[in-house]
Amino acid sequence: MAGTAGDERDSIREDERLGIGEDERLGVREDERASIGEDERDSIGADERVGVRDLFALLLQRRTTVVWALTLTVIGTALGLLQPLMTMRLIDRVGTGQSLLWPALLLAGLFAAQACIEGVGQFLLDVVGEGVVLRLRKNLTNRLLLVRIDVFDRHRVGDLLSRVGTDTTVLRDMVAGSFVQLVTVTLTAVGTAGLMLWIDPLMFAVVIGTIVAAAVLVAGVMTGIRGATEQSLTDVGTMTADLEQALGNIRTVRACGAELREAERIGADAEAACASGVRSARLGSLVSPMMEVAVNGSFLLVLLIGAVRVSNGDMTISELVAFLLYATYLVMPLAGLFSAISLIQRGLGSLKRIQETLKLPVETTPDPCEVPAQGPGPLLELRDVSFAYGDRQVLSGVSLQIPERGYLAMVGRSGAGKTTVTSLIERFHDPDEGTVLFRGTDLGRLEHRAYRRHVALVEQHTPLLYGSLRHNLTYAAPDASEDAIRDVLDTVDLGPLVRRLPDGLDTEVGERGLRLSGGERQRVAIARALLAEPDLLVLDEPTSHLDTISEAELAEALLKVSERCALLVIAHRLSTVRAAPSIVVMDSGRVSSVGTHEELLVRDRMYGQLVESHLIQSEKSAQEPAR
Image (cartoon, rainbow, N blue to C red; front, side, top):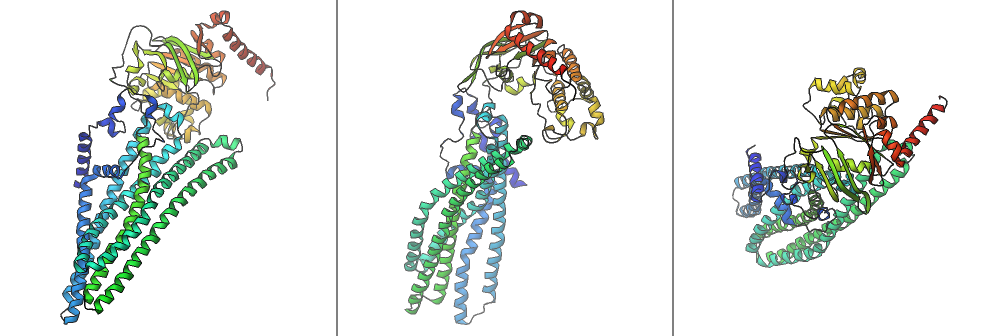
């Protein structure tokens, strides 16, 4: 516990030394609050070098535990280096006829002590690995939850999830496995080399020559291992993204009979990942044979030369045995060293992908001001706003006002820019040109989360979260009272549903709310938005899944809501549009006109065509026989 607390203090001090604040610990860098080129922030796939120093920077976050682990490793190594010397003395005693009891007991004690100490050291390094991965996973999670919406428009969610899971696991294995080998081998090599040089310089030169020859051959393999591992992780991310997409839309997949096509496509991703993994394994498989040749070759050479030197009287049997033991101590750990370096190369590939994710652009507001509780003019205003998705212009010079109270409907053909307007209002995107004002203040000066507490959005597809009905209702207002919950349930006519459910509000709604009907999910989404008591409620086609009776009831409820807050409704149904005192008509990314239903019928040809199409559809539906 003391070590853990010390690590936490060390981590905070390290953050403070680097000038990192609380936002940085959440995965947001201080310098990203500055206003710089947006495209430069999107660094996924950027060719940025990641080195061993970056790995050591991670270990510094747990420096107290690392120091203890290193201390135990040094002690264990020292105990290991004493064992050949004790063996040499034991053999000498055999020749003189002295008692072997105490030297044998001491040698056994050294073995036992080394095993226990190194075991504790390895455990501490495992703890370090888990702690490093925990911190990275928290930072990655916080980062991804704060990343700008347009980043998700360009990148696969499954691949980003793979970086949180698979890549951090590879990094954990590297920290816990290769780091201890790296330290142990270095210490053992230095100590062993000194003792071997003391026993017999000539045979030491033979061993070193064999190891250097093997090292030269292995060095060329390491770079290829890193590249192959990085490609393998990228392929796994692609496979995860495709599988996540297929499972997330499994009903569409089944309805379209696309199961086999999806399986084939995801199987191709798995084959690509397998091919990259095999390439990495093929390169890695060269390391062991090369080192095995070095181990066996050096051992045989030492044995042969040593036998000659013993026969000539240049060294004793005990010195030869000790030297052979030290040769084993030197060569075998060095084989482990190359395996550790191979694992480090894999870890560097994972760390590169993780660092790319931690540099993704987040929603930031330089020097934000307070969200105004009141202000001159309308609640929200768009002034000559233009916006494009890449090269596709969506909005051009849009201007409109939403009053503090009231019901404003927005209509237009598909692709007219209605949903994009809601995205700008929610600050999912910022306008390319023009200004969006909230109570007279530019949205660019308001902190995203603080502003969004004043604006609620009900999306067209009404997504619900896995969990209970209560969890979904109170998601935007977790401290809502039971009276407030009952009030919004009555407003959207969900009371009968709650009474029918086996566990009432605590009933599980299933993945994405699929245990509820489309209309029920829509009403839950509206109730969730109302429970937050926003100043502005934005609804994107709120009646698309409602029957005629429920639609009429909701239209009446929306009129009541508009007395408490501003209401913007994107609608296609005529009944919803006619209930609005003011209607905005969108056409090809522009505001065509604004007025009441009767006024627009007279002066706006586009609106007349929309209304006519709805009336024709209604008449046709009425003439069709019941089925």
